[in-house]
Image 1 (cartoon, rainbow, N blue to C red):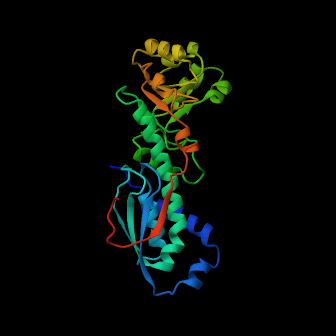
Image 2 (cartoon, helix red, strand yellow):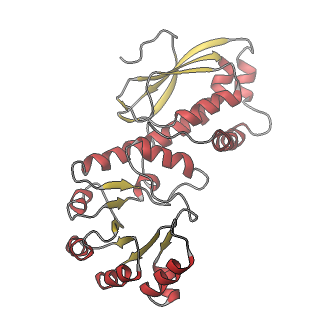
Length: 289
């Protein structure tokens, strides 16, 4: 079950997308060429194979343009789809459907692309016990839906933002003077409910982080040999996260070192758009070909 986002959050994102597309005068092409009382039937069709994500913002796109548009979904977020599959039936005022089309497909294509790439990473580390998660390298303003797409692809949540957890990065360490100083300062000033994590980029910093009380340690750009050494030295005293330059070609080997989590920035900053289309069709059209 993919967690639903609050309605106000989705509608804010979608309203900004619609305002960007419609400008001050709306869809003048559809308003001029399509009779206002013309109803029709359309289908959203997959033009590639992958994982679906994006139903919430798509529903909001149609609803905010015209409440008489009805989208009936044939697939759910997180479902695998293949080329030619009918994903949804869309019925209602033709002019309104065409007005909402591009914004709806933009959300669906972006989110399904993220879900599809995430699923590839999750599949690559299957049976290792490793969790695949995202980073904060997201599109400004779209983090909520992009991370929802990561979950649709089988990935796990990292921190949503800077207020979720303490993650001490290399610049924090540099300013504080050492890993132990930065972790100690954080640990002394937060309550027991707030998790403290620290990023290290050398193996010799690991003991320092553990002794200072870090509960999670991010191993930044470690070699496979150093990752294995870190796992041995930590001996389950903290959660170990591997990060930095992870690709589909390297993720399996990283997982096999014994780390707990692998964070992949590419899930959101480098996922290709998923190809979908809105075609005129019949309301009775089947859910697959």
